[in-house]
Amino acid sequence: MFRGTSYHRIDPKGRIVIPSRFRDLIGADGTAMITFFEGGLYAYTLEEWSKIEAKMVMLEKKGNQMRRFRRFFIGRASECQPDKQWRLLIPPELRQDAGLEEEIVLIGISDHFEIWSRAKWEEQKNLHEDDMNDEDFQNEIEKLGL
Image (cartoon, rainbow, N blue to C red; front, side, top):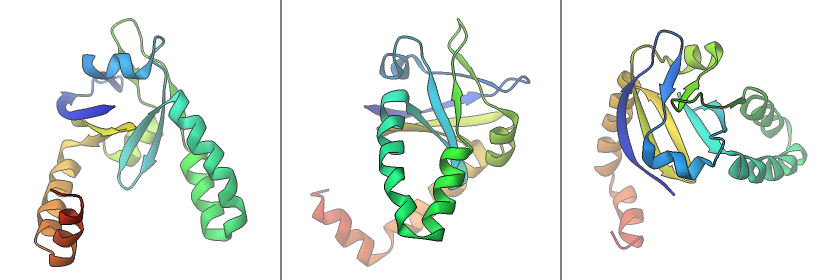
């Protein structure tokens, strides 16, 4: 499972270094499927991506909104393979959409990891703090036993 937060820099060519704790999880060749979602990039192993695509086929039957979601979530995805130094080249369109410039944050989220610009990550942290002040949300967290 992907876990933890790492602060890195994206190089001028658009490459990011994969943290060593993520490397074994990605697999021997290190290929990741990366797509844009909710302001950041979501990176999946090929195995997890296959599961997502299988579920997405069912969305076709759910109407126009789900069809559009599928079109953009899968259609914008890119298969990225690391070089010998375990750097992934993030395609320019995905870098631009996610606002990746210099400082980035990689966050392990169990079945995938996310790549955020440092500025957008700080915004996400603030939103989380706001969420934690919401009583209904606190009740949901308590149901998890936390």
